[in-house]
Image (cartoon, rainbow, N blue to C red; front, top):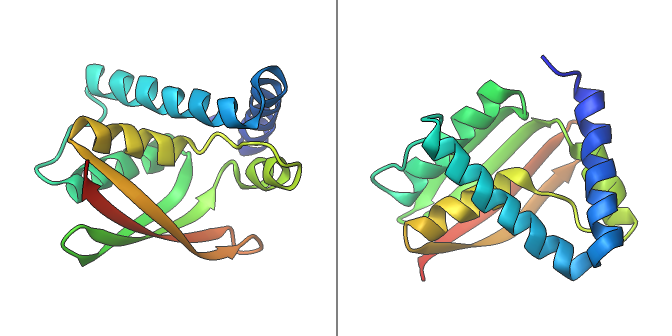
Length: 149
């Protein structure tokens, strides 16, 4: 296993370099592309499969991210036909993401961008609403509203 502090520091350094090179707005686009490349690679190596529904696909990605050590636990609780509450616990890049945001830089948001890429491939997009951020407990909660494109 890769040490979580190493991964968090590396994430900060890569994101900082991308932000410095291309600016915050373009960095967001670059990280969206990273999510697309990541999802494509996961599909090609069989690590993640498309589900029958968008939420099933998000679940498949969540289980992969847990197994990979990116997060300790991801809970996706369906609250409507195409709506869910997503709880993330033990985010490995939480400190770097907070530091980047505090510095007015774009964080990588690998989970989000990988999930966005999967939804895009299925003909959907998502609106995210921040519901909870507890840095001490390393717990983030969002509402995901999934809509056809």
